[in-house]
Image (cartoon, rainbow, N blue to C red; front, side, top):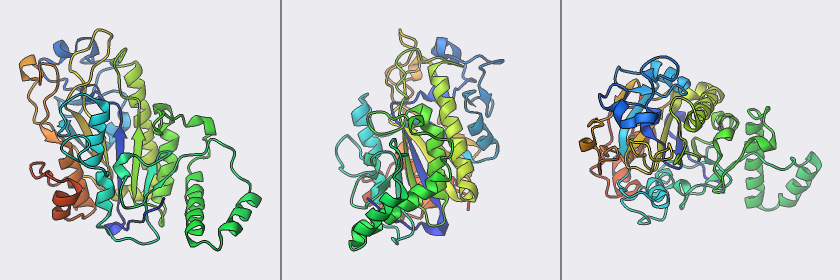
Length: 383
């Protein structure tokens, strides 16, 4: 399924779904908060030495596994949003992901993905498309506008004779012929970035998204597709594995390894995009955050607010948006969760409006209905 969206000024827009509920205080610790160590206990990072956070502004830092994101911060290509949440306030993965991807105010209110609705007002032609890096497009891209999906094959590639026979068979059918042509073009572009990847090097979760171990090669291959002059301009990565109920770890351990793999993947994406990086904006967000304190098995449970990252060469970064209320139990939602201060939809609206040029009235009425209170921050995209 293919959709072609010609974005203004040859810009790229990418969404990274961090599926499972990323611990925002692990990825972006508030190490300057006086209650940080007592609130996080075994999950708190040390103030200095091995495992200490990469300081950003004296109060917030990045997990030590995120050194590539730290470089983007230094280059003012990264903006961070803390205390972020969708309008959803319960703790079901299924319902929270539905709200994140449909852009609604509650689960199952809308049937289409907000990114698919955002594609509709953009000019369409046969050169540029929307690409889901998954075995099938996630709900975020589901809707009336057709989109493509791509994942490296786990089976041996077909030989040239077989492809020639298929091409001849489809020659008289304009739909099948065009679909095959685009698929072969996508495969060729991806092959430029997949030279070190074998079929078994891209593990997937049951929902079709890649497990953390397969992030870097997937982002490298997809980056080559997105970088092509006639390639897609919108991309979605669906990264699973952030539901850390037990043995989460702090400076090292399960979550630290996953953050490192994500960080390496994002660096591969930047490299493979090449010059297109300067016109790219990327939003990475999860369906909810996690509890501030550790549970009895050394992990964290489902929470409310978390974090979102906005980064790329087109981003005016180097700042943190937090509306911080502190980590004292009295400041927490239900005395356990970070309270929601920023609506995730506001970040998406800023990127869609200021970067892609989607009109404000379309964002308010169609892409994110009933989101008038979620005001898009200004100055996040470079002029």
